[in-house]
Image (cartoon, protein in one colour):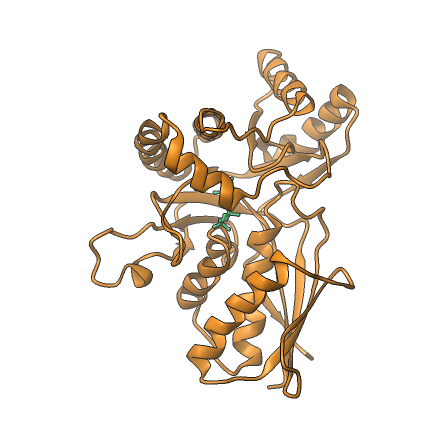
Length: 329
Ligand code: DP6
């Protein structure tokens, strides 16, 4: 094939990935669990360009320079190595969400890139293998290969091949209809990349050890809550896990702060809604946006209330699909 186009969606972790044990292989310190959404897809085309001496990357139609193309070329080198190929490529990627705003465009981005590139270089991969590959681009991308609830296994540190042991797979026994209302707090670039922020947290936060212990417990409890159809437990565990992650990074030296005053106002609104009897919980990633978890049937009402309370745009996200190839490329 000369090229391929793939589409992937962001995922939002209910139990967060925060901390690597191997930066080169992108091996996490702990398992994480997410929901892939049906909003904000990334579409990526990889077209082979045999006469070029380097890769060219456009993001939303603009030639990218610096960190983004560097990371994409490093990723394509992995694919080319495995395929035994040398051609350079043109990569054209389109996001439907502001890059760097903590809505994990790196997850949808590297999931779509992994699928499109493996096809463009005639290296069609089965989903688990694709998940491992996407992981090398960005950890959370391992989860966006799959739709719905997804668990990413850290893999045993003493596994014979740690790379093989770390991949994501769907959670097949979940019985919860969960929606996420995204409150778009700000769209500016984030102050610190999640890569650097994670590195700093692992190296300097006195809370990191406790964070890992807590997140391991949260993962077990989350799996039980999903299988048991216990929405209130899912929401409560997700919110406390997210707050714990932010507290852990805020204790790094120097501190990492993604939440703004505006984020905290949304958090207060969610608490007030809860006191007034609405089932709603918050989660936040490497940016100021807040994602509000609620029952699928309540999503439109929760979105309306949050829009009124925060005066910010809201988008309702529901369970979405895994990465797919667009035919006709
Ligand atoms: C806060 O996957 O973007 O969204 O592996 O360094 O590319 P790298 O990090 P990335 O981190 C995501 C962190 C998070 C939590 C999560 O998605 O689990």
